[in-house]
Image (cartoon, rainbow, N blue to C red; front, side, top):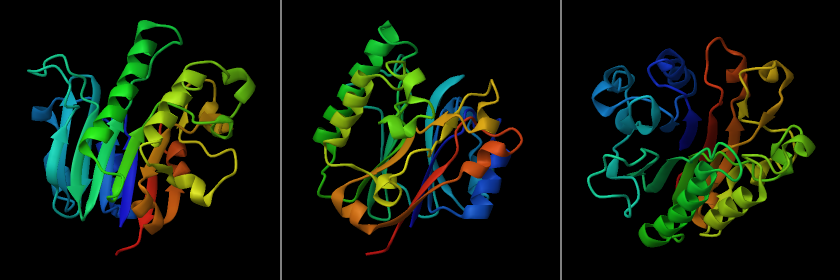
Length: 260
């Protein structure tokens, strides 16, 4: 069972890259973030033509999440239970589904823009609400996999220049604490079971030659509950995607789980 997460930074702009990835790597589940498209315009047919069932939740020009699965997608939930009723002002950032016995939560966490800003406060509050959602709607005793773009580099191993980034957005201590509080639900950073070393990145600036210099951050994660973690046999960061023509500023991350 291969579960992949990928911030595609616009599904319509990156559709060819997504289809190429599906054909080459054949994930059982592909969770997308930052799809940037309303549901009526989501390109579901080309993805279904590749043999995937698709569910999605998006908005024009911002945010948006989607899950593709080779098998049936069940019990789909959009957003948080405490989102405003009516949903007109709700950011499309969280999508949950059950696939092949895994309860999967696909997240596009708030960026926060700048430490101390209103958007930063919103980010910390959103992550608090995420933890409350996990506590209310999930059980750490089940096979839970939480994936996505967390917009947080969890520790200095995940940062190409820790001294320069220290205290800045994506790397500030309150953000890291907020993410660790989410993980305290009972989630393990799956990559670190296999690769404890520094220098593994999933996101790079478009500017300043960061891609070519490999000056990145690791902000995309696969987090597993204890039972799911025990079944995880590998985590792959597809960093070759960053050097392709026109991909997202993020690369896919795949966790491999053995069957029961």
